[in-house]
View 1 (cartoon, each protein chain N blue to C red):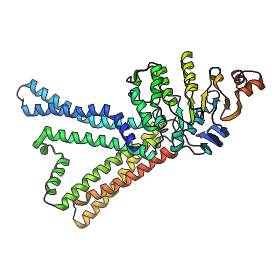
View 2 (cartoon, each protein chain N blue to C red; view 1 turned 135 degrees about the vertical axis):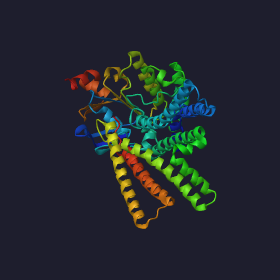
View 3 (spheres, rainbow over the protein chains, first blue to last red; view 1 turned 45 degrees about the vertical axis):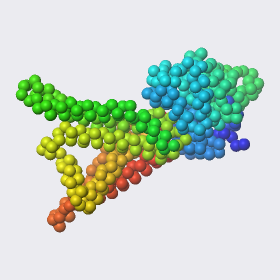
View 4 (cartoon, rainbow over the protein chains, first blue to last red; view 1 turned 90 degrees about the vertical axis):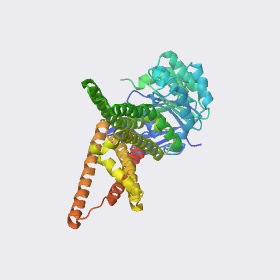
Length: 232
Length: 259
């Protein structure tokens, strides 16, 4: 099978500033992959390119062998780092919205997760706390049977208990034949669920390796290794 | 998917725009009562009548300008700010996104304008002619002629079509300019305004050229008829619709650049 994500000479510049520099990268199916790098390293740019929110300056990016478009958007479940839902909508309206647009959306799974968090379907999003809004977004994304889940900083800015819940939700709900790409700089929190990591620095991929391989070869945790690689 | 997009676009806008448009009807009703009661006589009653009339006029401006500003802001925030992250990751055609947004916005503007016209007729009734609103005189004369003359009926129908096409063109002008503003890395909104004023100036120049040409024809032939005025409006309106639509589509499809 072809990799779920293929980048070939992928470059993105903003004005004259280089955000991604000639990236060559393949992401395989059925794996939880950490996209790790410091702030401003190009993680979010790469994720936006996967989702068709940006266009490459040069090179190409393929999802399931296709350029980002309607077909690839059907197969990617994307959680951005910001609240992208209309604040005036009720939770149940947002669930209906996802049901209407994504054929792979599982309504029962969404309501089940909402009930476990005691989030009322008739609550308006604007009345929920920031952390609860993020959980609602995560529930919507993880209620899809996608081929690729792209989660941009899903645990940034939430308390440790919420982090545990989010990570548990990701591991418990993703389609086993799918891949999860999880962008973060909080490596210690996610290390245990990752199969593979991609280190990115200043728009360049500096490492792609299995987490077990890093622990075995380097004799240290991925978090420790990351700190050494990205030491200022 | 187009139907679903239109449904959610409508739901996103009606919560604010229904109350705003109801305001037109409420203030019209009170102004109509004041006008009919003929309460002139005491200074206090005269003052009250003037205040109600003033509130009425202000509310009409508020409804029209407020609706337009809200629709522009709604397009910008739902397409190019945070909510754009959801919109542009939906598995839908960009053409459908544009059609849904432009169609709903134009319908709202038509509703607002229609309510304002109806309101003005209700409030001022036959005295209205004296206020010198030529639009109503023209519409009234066209309507009168329409029943007796097939040619005039055609002209009236084409005039209304040209008016609607013009509204679509205005809405698309805004979407195109906001979309072009996304070319800027740091000042997207400011750049959008810049494009809007530039387009406005270009349109003014083209209109002036057309008017000068028409005047020269009148001077030469000494003849002028309103019957074909709709042709210019319709043709330019259609050209603007196509150009602004293509710009909006191109920017969304090929130059999307969400921060």
